[in-house]
Length: 201
Image (cartoon, rainbow, N blue to C red; front, side):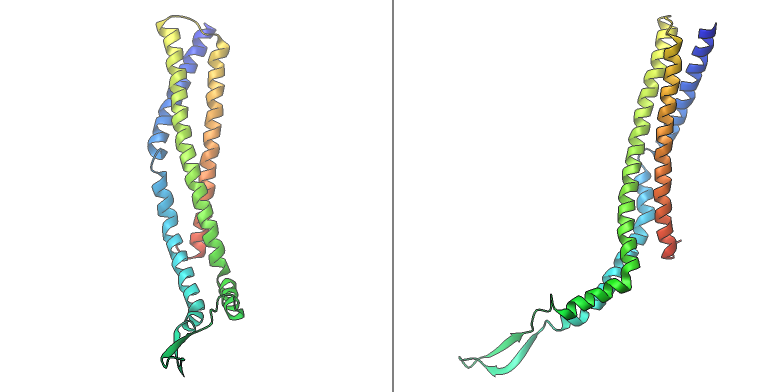
């Protein structure tokens, strides 16, 4: 009698969890990469464009010095020759321009670096969550199908400890996937905070 009650609750638990797992995989299985790109690409492109424009402006005086200058002097063969301006890279002026650019754009540079790192972590967490849900479904099918097959088809009684143990095992899996959901939310919030700072939201 007690075994039948435990069996009923065990099969009901596994069946319900299996349905929820299929729904979760349908929603989060293979489309989260699109969400990551939608959330991060606009602000990433905006920061990249801003950094490129600011860097070009900071280095413009340096590159203007690099053109050829026609000298009025003649070479030994009587031909006029060109003098190339001294390479400014490594010069104090070049270092000053770079330092000025960094000082003036450090928030954008820090946000760009943080955004790229968080984006990669979010994509990794999304892939891990998708594969974890798929693995969870496979294990759940194994438990639910195996218990039903042994108990209902072969009419063999599994120990109550095995039935209860299967429930606790899947609860541990649910907790693990829940932690992955929390990680994904954390990464999304960090990207959202960067978007707010740059008026993307």
